[in-house]
Amino acid sequence: MLTKLSSRAGELFGFLNRTDGSLRSKILRSGFWQALATFGVNGLTFAKSAVLARLLAPEAFGLMSLSLMAIRGAQLITETGFGSAMVQRQGDWDSAKDTAFTLLALRGLLLAVLMVPVAYGMAAFYGKPELVALITVLGASFLFSGTANINLSRTIRELDFKKVAIIENVVGFASFVVAIAIAWWTRSVWALVASFVAAAVIKTALSYLLIPGKPVFHIDRKIAIELLHYGKFITASTILMFIASEAGGAVIGKMLDVAQLGHYSVAFLLANFPPTHVAFVLSNIMFPAYAKIQNDLPVLRKTFAQVTDVIASLVMPVMAGMAAASGTMIGAFYGAGWEDAVGPFRILCIYGAIHAIVTVNGYMFNGIGRPDIGFRIAVIRVVSILVLIVPAIKLWGTVGAAAAMSFVMVTNLLYGLYQVTKVMGASWGEVLRPLWPATVKSIAAGGAIWIADQLLPDSKLEIVWLILVGAVVYVPMNIGMIKTVLKLKK
Image 1 (cartoon, rainbow, N blue to C red):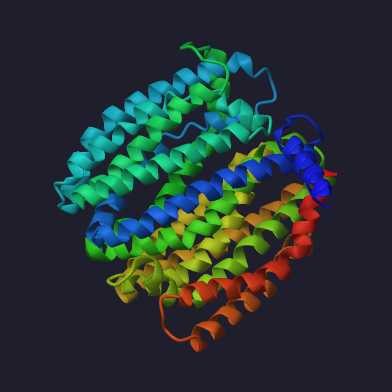
Image 2: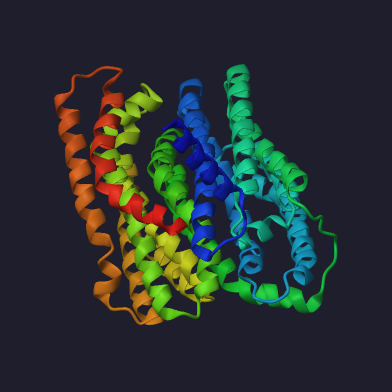
């Protein structure tokens, strides 16, 4: 028995460390390494947020939310799409890498300088002078992220995620240590800032230590135009996605107060934590995979249905369970003083579940060379949110913001599926069928955890029991899907 297990373990280890094989083998192998990176990093991120919530006041999270709004805004408004273009690129890769690297480095320098006037503008608008220093220091991260090794895109393009996983986990651990140490020492928002900047510095350094090849500064005008042509829709889409995702926090920070923004931002983070990172795993793997099969419609339709089934079955039951036990979860992970996060969190679980599916679909459109569809989806999201968000907050506060965001995300899903029927020649039955099993599983998981939450006595161990109940329900429901995925290796 031990010999057999040892042999199987050796076979699995050898499989995971190879880079050859069929597309299916590469997808499965990449899935393991990307999952290791994502769940390792985001497990640390979640633990970091839970610890910091006990060391820092909600106002600190509110200030960081406003600061990151400026950083993400600058980053996304100037998003070039060069990384995606390099992964999707069908021509000679080496001829384009130096141009992409140089343009990204120049963008990073420009953004670092730009954040100084932006910081003063944000401070004046929100009446928070401390934002000047916070945003300016955070802007330094652009200098490092802009000069990361462009050859990292090659490893993603070839579905080789082992070194990516190592980099991400080291960065996540270092960020965790920096944040907790400085929070313990200062008990201020600077712990969050230092953690963010440290992550950018360490990731760039590791990209050169672990990824072979060093780019040089050089711009080829023809290649630059090609990259910009592909990236124009991605740039426009990311600007709109930024407005859509940050609208709730921006309006809450202006209409209500920083403490309520802190509660909303924590609820938003927790509700998006599982789905967006599962989506990140699948998106990073499937983007290059979709690029390889973009011209084979039958295979594309089949793959789309399988991926939708997997992402929906992985995410939707988890979010249903989290919504059912929302009060217990917030109390267990964040402690006293965070009760106002429960209401928006419960509703944002809908947003998170649907967001995961929409995100994976968006990468699919980019992978098949149709980033214009993602742009149209982003337009619908922004217009809808801008219409709904202010009256929703006036009527119901942070709960209204959560409801508006969730409603708009459902409309995005439906429009995206409509585009799938046109692009792939699929029927509505084909695109909706993969969602039904996940819906049934969600009702079962949510119901079981809600009943358990009502029956179990209040104690520090209640959340542990609820997690066990969720696992008992969740794992058997998805065992068939797990077996199907494992068969890909063959």
